[in-house]
Image (cartoon, rainbow, N blue to C red):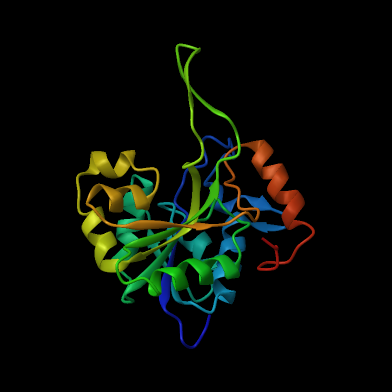
Length: 232
């Protein structure tokens, strides 16, 4: 963490892990010799742009998260990802925040620094998100039948970290529980209230661990790298 840090990091780590079939919270499963959460914690600890860190923990597992979190503050997560982010944001005093999913253990300190720096340099922008151009051919289908092929030239696969101006994110999160539960990322909430969000192109490994296959891929990559050194 740099002395001239610009942002606080919020790590969303309260997910149940049901889709992974982990038998417990995803952030606490071991991958490449350490809990999944610990990889993201190591990356933010090395990021020059990040000062304080707040982690949204699975309800009832706060002490386990604290044992991983080091100096980070731990709060109890909510019923949805966005609700967890909102609860963590209440503890943020900085003007900028970088939101990251603990399920993305390959994100590097360089990526955190980059999205925060991009946001800080554009006063008209409410958010900057790490993203990769979509490479696959995309088709829209109904009941298994292809309806159309979707042009991909303007499509991006959005990742985390996502950096935001705290005031803008607070405004976006001030909505009903149903909307929060349906949001798959924080940028969509910013967009819904008219905020400008930019993409930061990133072609480095940054997969989200959702399935057992994802877990094996991440483990293979992390097993031969130390935190913060995966090259883009």
